[in-house]
Image (cartoon, rainbow over all chains, first blue to last red):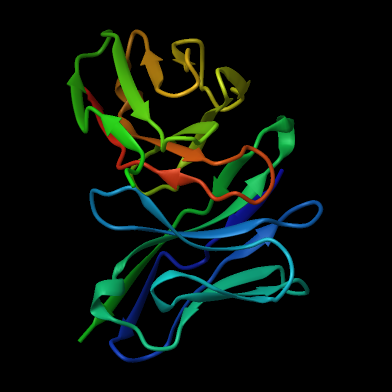
Length: 115
Length: 115
């Protein structure tokens, strides 16, 4: 089965500093990888996805992610963090087992950006 | 345009009661998904519809859970004989197409509390 792991429950960063939220994956075949963000009492919002092609994927709100096949990682990055980026971030992989198209999510990483 | 909507936003019920949760997907989206998110966890897949039919229901925890999408648009998740362990946020998502890399767009969720 496809899976993703987010090794950090929480990441703290100062505003203006670069941020990284880590994700590693385990899949058979080529992975379809996604990042979503969840603000309190709201649904998940799509940030970006990797399907194929360029290993550096650019997404919404200045976020980007780097796909690294040798390290089976798909870390989320932003060059300069904002306080408003504070939220819960989920990495996900498309799971085609059983003929479906479900997403398998990681456990989430709480990002806290401080002044 | 309008996103995925879910009603009610909150539902409190007593153990043993029957509940229905409704999802209205983005217009034109043929694929619809239900997920369940427990506190401190990532969303977990329940069921996926392509059109009117359930293409993958492998995530439904037991036969107390059932979902329908009779006209290929609105979907209802039905839970019989609710148990305290069913308490969670139930998320609905839709996508333009079922296969391939199409991202899923999530609704705000229904928070179910079983007393």
